[in-house]
Image (cartoon, rainbow, N blue to C red; front, side, top):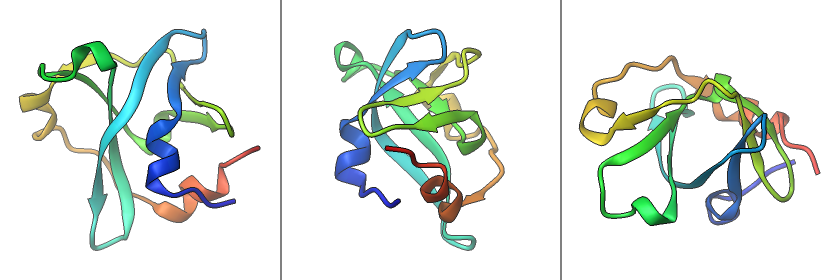
Length: 101
């Protein structure tokens, strides 16, 4: 299954234990591997601030038709620090292959 960015960013992002983190507001793409490096998650109440979550593809547990589930060990990061955080690239095909309805 495939998903476009409009649909992806409209899905709520929750931890495995059910805590709502927010929605995808941005992503970082590795142009050499054509893969997603990171997803930036913000709660709507935080827009305009520098608090967010950065999630690598390896931290995504499942993408369903109505939400994205990520590991419980996600932590808030400062946006300025996030640009310096290295993450290993994972091909976009991995994201598509993990999709479930």
